[in-house]
Length: 166
Image (cartoon, rainbow, N blue to C red; front, side, top):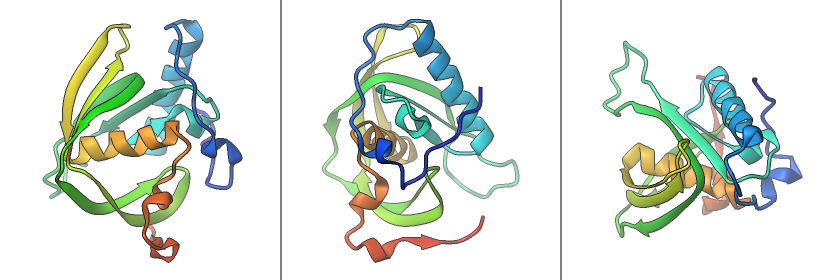
């Protein structure tokens, strides 16, 4: 079911999410709602707090448009439960980020280029994997949401936020 995405003025986005204790029907429904809402909203990543649920769950997926000259690789649908970053690269990159909770607002954010992630997968088994570039950026962004941190918190100057219509 498609859910309303909370916007930046919601206090809930500043709260810390709680770990998922077991993969029950409610958690599976939350995951379905996140995937439906992400796809409907045409975003790349979405975390449970963005739809008002303070649980440590995030989803992401990216399929570039057919005519796109973008060299970024597609990202298949990934569901992470209780994710944590266990290792980060020293190398970072500053790139544009936006957020479904900040419609049409963007800023340049510095993130680690590579990370190692540990989480539970949809099959309730622990997974560990390395992510780089766009995938690493999306995971870091969404994991921040689970801790009540927003991408604008990473801007050196709040006036560095900009808008444009896509």
